[in-house]
Image (cartoon, rainbow, N blue to C red; front, side, top):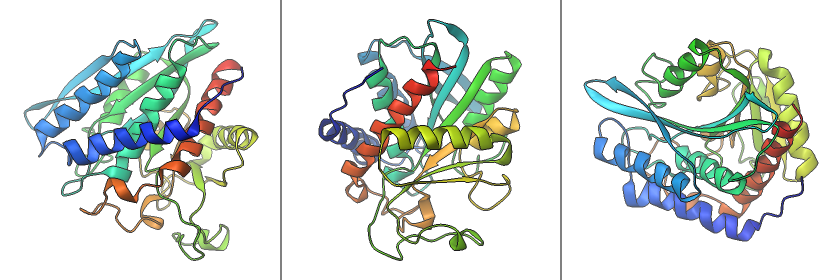
Length: 295
């Protein structure tokens, strides 16, 4: 399937979403409950403008109702096989969350828009997760774990999960990229690439996503399959799917290992490099199409 994507227009649309989430709405979490609700309503509204029907998975945390949100393109061949694309929409306390994770949400919204109405061989599901940030991270109140647990309970056949996590900051300056030990010995020191990261059980998925990305784009990319306990490897919603036995990868700019405003009040929309982010999102959309067409 050949897709034309106007990356200039895509960059503008990505910026619009990030500014809405991080500037007009701002910090969004259980302690900014009204803003958290506004962001979930915004996500649902964008999806519904593309004729999706949003499913809300409600659960309660600290006496408040919170929601994971999902839409699905049902496959025309193996509808029971699901490629899941996810991003968390909450931000850490004290942070407007432009890059973490307004960019991941924006990417997911635009990928869903670009694919709206297209029926691929297997199903493609887009999910916006609540409560990824501390103190809920890697607890039973983490939205993605609540969701992945339900998927396992329903015996859903998720062929792969792609977590879009902090994907908007890039630099061509040498020395702009850092790593935890021992990765500095193996990877470049310039923060101009997108990372594709998974645990050892997800190695085949990491390789497939990386190879497909590189077929569709010359944007720099680096991949890593490593034990999930290693620093940074499990730092997003893919971790929850590993816990439930699914193969999952994180697509990321590596967050705090290059982005100085990570988890600070300075994580604001003007720091995102939208034209480079658009290239990543364009390529990832093609990755999803190819993966969902060839199962």
